[in-house]
Length: 449
Image 1: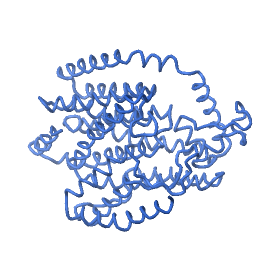
Image 2: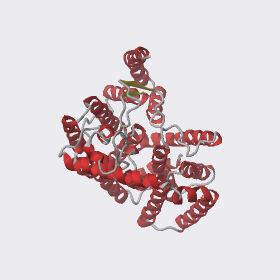
Image 3: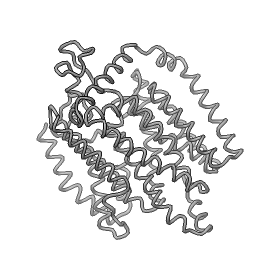
Image 4: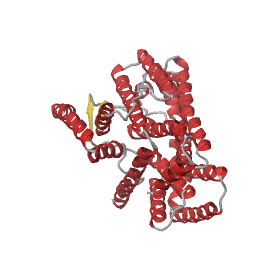
């Protein structure tokens, strides 16, 4: 089987990628298909070739993974190199912080019990930077970003259909195309926040209003049906932030009407699922909370023991009884999982300082996004930074409780939103130079959802 995987990979790399570059360069429709694949397969990594796969390992990476997303990213990057309209910037905003985060993560490998597991994660981190860099350079204007936003409803419908199918098959806590319901909950929340922001910031009538409301409603249903406690709570927080930002920049009676409608719909949904949500939140097993607390102590012990951490992607090894970090609760021979907090995971594996670097990096982009809200406050374009602001705040909060942001689908999505933030910050210089008529012409196209 391994031999077949290698044949498929090298055929795709040596034949598929060059063919894709030629076709995408010469045909805009093919280019759009590649962009669609680059987006769609962030929520479905079924077409992934995993070299040196270690399926039984409980870690953040289990092999050298190459997916359709990576190949599509490579194709689009090469196409951009060939087209003079793209001015490639290899190190976009935030590159220094990400490089420091990557470098300190690699420094931790000296303490790894299994260095191969660490290199699994290094490859993923490098791929994520390439993904961010390509999107940043692809977004040469807001029209390019809008193309990506128009793909999001297709992803939502696909994920919803998967959830409904699993629910009908009796799956408790449907997980859609992901490996866990928490990953699904995190992936959906920023998309839902963006479409809620559209309802508040863009005046629409007829079908468009129903369309945008429907996509937002599907996101809400997906969140509730996952019965992810952190996901439901953080999604509610994301929507609350969207409402707060929207009213902060401008109060309108129409927004009050939208808010009241959404509130009534949300209450109806909560009442429909009230019993399931009640059981999930108030009758969760005590062993789950105890395990979280014990793993957090283990992670703290690791971070305190080594300045550079115990080794990237080695938590799943060193948390176990043969190492000293879990002696406070673990009987000999017992096997444990991963600490739920992504921040403690980074601290344990790569050191406290690198955890602070990571926090500074995400704050860097979040503050840039807040500046975008202020800059675009008089424009319809403000819906995007508002939606991203609500969604990312929820993601960062959920990451305190769960480590799923390290999983490839959620990691890809995070880097996509970082690219949108950095690009909109770059666009503002050109946007500010437009005349009133040119701005109106640009914003008139935004209603096309």
